[in-house]
Amino acid sequence: MRRGPRPLPLHLGLLGMRRWLAMTALPLASLPGSPSSKPGWPRSRPALESLAGRLAAAGHPPEAFARAVWRALDREDAALLVGIRAYRRHPWQREAPALSVPWAEGGSRLLDYGGEGPTVLVVPSLVNRADILDLMPEASMLRFLAGQGLRVLLLDWGEPGPVERRFALTDYVAGRLERALAAAGEPVVLVGYCMGGLLAMAAAQRRPERVRALGLLATPWDFWAEDAGRARSLGALLPGLEPLLAATGAMPVDVLQALFAALDPFAVAGKYRGFAALDPDSPRARRFVALEDWLNDGIALAAPVAREVLGQWYGANAPARGEWRIAGEAVEPRQLAMPSFLAIPSRDRIVPPASALALAGALPGALVHGAAAGHIGMVAGQGAEEALWRPLRRWLSGLGL
Image (cartoon, rainbow, N blue to C red):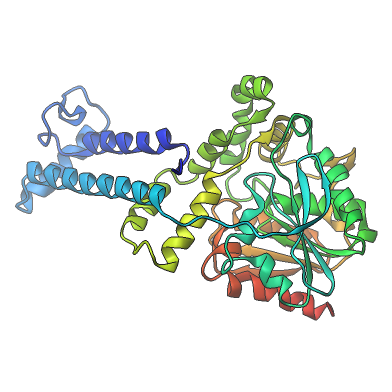
């Protein structure tokens, strides 16, 4: 049986917190024992008295309003539990395609999706698995490109084992990624997704002779562009996480998932309530299960990488300030002379559009493509083919590839 949504205690705890918040906001006489009914409840009391007065003036007893709110919470919480149960029991299972592996090192593999033509090497994030780019037969950017006159390779980073748990970003870029580029044989179109875009950009700067063009999909650059305070607050978490990183050598999956959940704490519950109403045999329900399986089957992040990402990227905004270094060399997009493509999803809550747009001014002659999608939907959602896959292929065609 599936384990998601992860971390489950967090999402169930949010239900209790929402009820507590409702109790504090309901009119004073609504619920015996509610904090809002106690004389010592300070800040909210004037607002609650005003709400109670307006309800009474409109002929709605505050007690009836409170009961209606409670019934709505009961319905929504029940729907969430139904959705979780339906997800965990859904029969869909991903069948991994049988692919050749032209190169492997440690837990990392280069997967060959076939196709004939110029080589495209796709670099996913170190957070979560590479499966999002080949989610299911009808939701696979990689299979689409392989059917469009391109040879498609995927760098699957794999789980961080004892060796990888000591890796910093330099080890991944100047080590694994550069050796994968060499194994590809010919110069490639290097395409990076999310965090993978930053790694691809660093590798392209170090090995420009191996990269004929660069595609960056939902790739952050200016981590302070939209909400510097939130970014700094993520960096400020690092000292508290340090004992865990030191003890395990990695940032565990559930910690990563909790950080993502903090972007919109009640979004997961809303998704599962919506899933509860779907026909389980529908394509939409199967895609939901596929996406959630991917989200819930995450991989840990090596401790040195977690320190760099939280402390340097979010805490210090090192990339945009020209201070992020790989093997001692600052990563500077202005040095990249190859053609580049920036795909920026307009509804991205993981990488704010302004963070990705900062690369448009830093990359010489970059083509900026605005996708009407979210961070994940752009690559694997129902509208992904029109939002990203075809525009990416048209850009490559424009380069004669």
